[in-house]
Length: 198
Image (cartoon, rainbow, N blue to C red; front, top):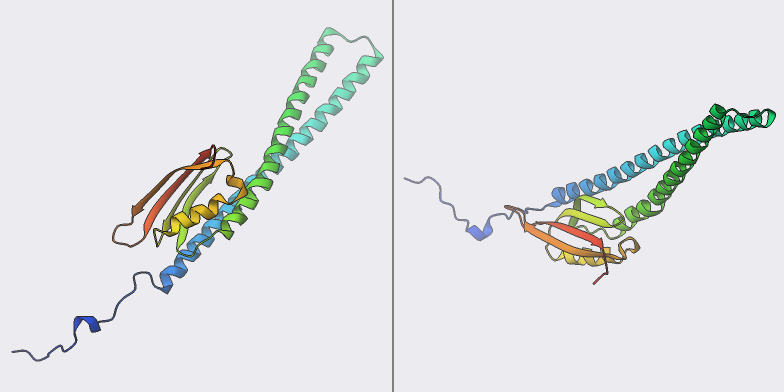
C-alpha cells in the first residue's frame, strides 16, 4: 500500500541548464588562458631570436677585429699564402654571419609586426558563444580549431575573421563542423591558405 502520492506533474519539475553560468565562465577562462598562453609563447620566441641575434653580433664583431689585425699584418709585410688563405676564410665566415644576422633581424621584425597585431585582432572578434581550442598562424597557411555553443555563430565569426588585414589574400578553403556528443555544441575546424579571397 502507498504511503505517498506525488501530485506534481512533469512540467512542474525544475529544468536544469546544460550550459549554466559556471560553465560559461569556465569557457571564458579557458579562452583567456589560451590567448595568454599564445602571447607568452610568441614573447618567448621573440626573446630567443633577440638572444641569437646578440650572440651573432658579438661573434661578428670579434671576427671583424681579427680581419683588421690581418689587414695590418698584410700592409706591414708581403703576405704568405697561408695568411691570405686564413684572411679569405675569415672574410667568407663574416659574410655568412652577416647573412644570418639579416635573416634573424627579419624574423624578429616579422614576429613583432605580424603576430602581435593578429592576437589583438583575434581578441576583438571574440564571441562569447565560441572559443578556440587551438590555432596555427603561418605566412601562407592558417588553421583554427574550436567549439561553438551555437552552430550559426561559426559563419558570423568567420566573416569577422576575414575582415582582419592579416588574412587578406588567404582563402578559407575548408570548414568542418561536427556535433559534440551529448551536447548542443558543435566543434569546428577552419583551414585557410594563400589565394584569392571569395
